[in-house]
Length: 207
Image (cartoon, rainbow, N blue to C red):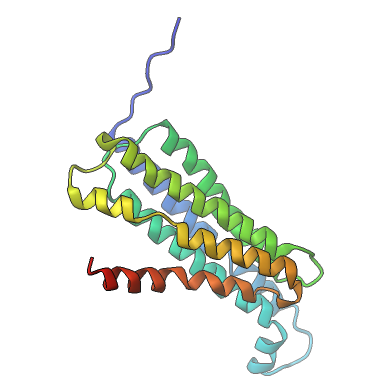
């Protein structure tokens, strides 16, 4: 006896998005906890500038991760604004996307610890899973037009969100991290390049 098809309603889509937003908000909050621990471990009475200098790697990791999670959520928000329904693939890929978001605070704590080898490479791999998940979600809208709002602008929006530039930046950052591990978290700054570059190219094409 076969199981009946699972019912998927607009309310279910709203719950999926709301749950995702809640997980992202918690992940952003968790990023600051290692910094709070660092502040409580200060034994001497350093100035604010001295304290910042002593923990510059942790601060850099925090700001990069906060910006990265924000950008990931913003991209997720922009993609999901085009959908009026969802399917099993989107539902299951959200599990991978949310898992990568939840792991990012752990990855941030690891890259803030100089004693952990390959922490930056692990961070980049986690980002790869997050961005890859968003690409799969956006592709579902192109493959299943019934899931998205019936508008030509919507299809152009989904078609334009390839994430290829960010994936290339991640690969380059991973290679740089493996070849020159002494650079620490600096290769992660390459992730800020695809966004502005894509905007410039779009304006140049007159889109």
